[in-house]
Length: 361
Ligand SMILES: NC(=O)c1ccc[n+]([C@@H]2O[C@H](COP(=O)([O-])OP(=O)(O)OC[C@H]3O[C@@H](n4cnc5c(N)ncnc54)[C@H](O)[C@@H]3O)[C@@H](O)[C@H]2O)c1
Ligand SMILES: [Zn+2]
Ligand SMILES: [Zn+2]
Image (cartoon, rainbow, N blue to C red; front, side):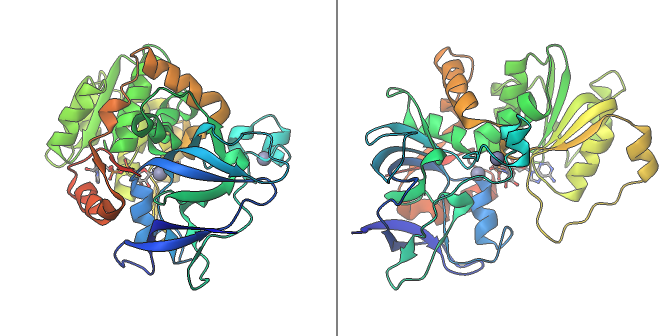
């Protein structure tokens, strides 16, 4: 017996997100069905809608969610019915090359549900990041459920399921920001602002926010940015160098993911500094850099998938930081909306008027 629920689907490239009836199968072995409580609107959902991730339409959007386990399939031991969980897109396999080396944060064979959710006519849906959470119930692999406490605000902590974890992790895991370092973050949406908060948590003392929108920059200061640069009116590289004794920052995080922002990050870091790419480029983008500069400037160029997080380790640690008042997760929730408001939330994201819109179910 399958569940029939309402969810947000994009049928083809650039088509509007519409509410459809979704058929969610009973959980099979290793799977869980989760009642979604809240789900944040991430730029990656918009990338899916625009065909920037894959062309496997139709998509069931949403992936930044808090929920409660409604049913589990055979052999599930990780979670039980009634558990309050954040959904993650890194259910590690324990057996691939990365896991075998003791680096499960890079797991190359993460689990998703084996069965597919469908439209009423049987059309199989591609769930965003193997989750699909703008829906009343979703089907995931049990390992995609990370159990959390009962009391913290679902909308706030659910953001750890993607963008906020990606940003914080880009700073603390991938960038390995240390006390006293200088950090610049290019692009101050949900992900970049979280990278700023992460840099502050790690003890960075100079934190430079870069964006093309003054409102985003003002907001970034509330999350720990010590300086702000509008790269529409100032040269980002020159400005970051000027704020770091003429040298460049120890760590520069590109939370936009375009060739021009990556180039800024590359040249705005100090010699032997680290560049972290956490913004997601689209397939047609190309980068050209003098190879001699890549060599001569030393340091490392890293990409950050999901902030190199390990959900079982990082989610509860960050919820504890939130409860101790060191991480303002509430500040990321700009507005709470309904399932029917996702399309309008994409517009507000593009206008730059929200940090996170969170769907409440
Ligand atoms: N690596 C990961 O695991 C991961 C996870 C989640 C999201 N992402 C990606 O991170 C990126 C940011 O996501 P978001 O949800 O924060 O998006 P967002 O739309 O909320 O924010 C983007 C920000 O970048 C700014 N911006 C745009 N162009 C710019 C430019 N040329 N220079 C400076 N600033 C610029 C915008 O003004 C905005 O503030 C997206 O590409 C998203 O797909 C990556
Ligand atoms: Zn693995
Ligand atoms: Zn996301």
